[in-house]
Amino acid sequence: ATQIIWFRQDLRLEDQAAVVAAAAAGPVIAVYVLDDATPGERRMGGASRWWLHHSLAALDTALTARGARLLRLRGRAGVVLPELAAATGATTVHALHHYEPYALTQQAEVAKRLDLRLYDGLTLLPPDALTTGGGGRYRIFTPWWNALQTHMPPHTPQPGPAQFEMAPAPAGDTLADWALLPTRPDWAMGFRNWQPGEAGAHARLADFAGHVAGYDTGRNFPAQAATSRLSPHLHFGEISPAQAWARLAGEPGARPFLRQIGWRDFAVQTLDAFPDLHWRAMRPEFDRIAFTDIDGGDGAYQLAAWQRGRTGYPIVDAGMRELWATGWMHNRVRMIAASFLTKHLLIDWRHGERWFWDTLVDADLANNAMGWQWVMGSGVDAAPYYRIFAPVTQSAKFDAAAYIRRWVPELAALPGKAIHAPWEHGGARGYPPPIVDHATARARALAAFEAMKL
Ligand code: FAD
Image (cartoon, rainbow, N blue to C red; front, side, top):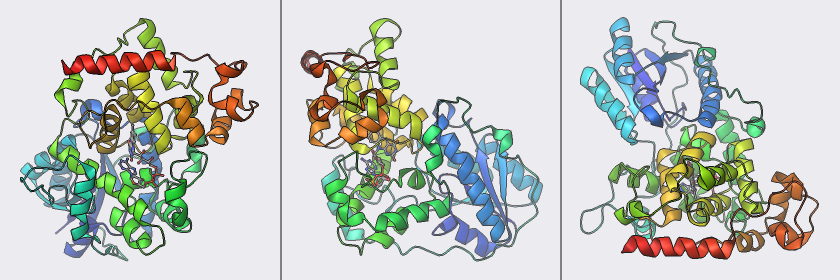
């Protein structure tokens, strides 16, 4: 009988258990459903849509080379897939297990009408596999990571089918029908440096394998291209974490990198245990903070200045502009920029999370929400709330001068030290003065946190 392969954030043919199982069971229909209805306001953001467009094109090409093709359907997965099944006589749907709250809804709705078979492969280990001595979920990374080691290495990556037997299917939409590409001319200029799709993911991995030895020393320096930039490929499942593990584990110096891959798993297990992660603080007192009002006045202006990289703090602005232009931001700078928004400007982390959601090509419900709550210190891991990243100190310590020159051209001519704090050296034409004073802002944030605990 006809088997449906339902692709979501697992857009690959290798090491994809749903693909393998479906192809072994009969002729297949490979389908991607653009479902904006089930996630509602958590539908994919703009940068992710750009990525999706190109990744689906690549997947279709890869399927075609193996005798199949990609069917594109739009609508609520719980409605569209049963309709497809009814039209084609298929009864079984094969998919990878996903854990975002809306993905669980999709799964439940599809399973009500069809035989839905879910497989592991999103993570190194299913998120509910590890529990603490008390039977609960881990909230702190290191003990979780240590517990994970007894299950590592992950499974050996499974090869995909060399050839598919294709079942007849309706025509479906074209990619152009979905209008996924950005229409703003100033946005996404640097997106073209990415190569979405499984082949692009493997090219990135192969390239990174050649310099993983320098990862640990280089990873905190935004001017160095020391990190893998695999995040959008991993988010869209163009490569599995098990494949990255298998390729890199034997390389000298790979451990710190594998640990970061572990953080991705940790985020999935945290979201699975705490499905409100993207809108509710894990420690409830953090929802009592008197955040800056952003519906007008200073707050609205400050949020916009942060979004557009006009805060007057060069390291923050460089990061926000890198994000706007390329859909990606270096991890060290994500931490600094997020800390600046939530602590220096005392703007609710949820506004920052939403901006990242819309502008990151690697926007990921679990990783993004965990990243923001980690910076807030609101209950993910042991990160303390009173840590406030000092932008100037961080910029100098992690040698961001070349990074700033690249992303903030108004400052390109400033010499050495001046670039981290231009206002102390007479400023630069066209570049704003600091939007808040560091010491004042820091004191205000600490006072707000103290008040929250009362
Ligand atoms: P590498 O350093 O090469 O790491 C390899 C992979 O490990 C990454 O691709 C990613 O999948 C995973 N990883 C690394 N660090 C983390 C981490 N701290 N948390 C979870 N996974 C990690 N990452 C996202 O993928 N999507 C997001 O939406 C996202 N939002 C973030 C928001 C904030 C405020 C912060 C502080 C971090 C966020 N991160 C997010 C985590 C991290 O910044 C990125 O994963 C990383 O910068 C991606 O670059 P890379 O692939 O070169 O990373």
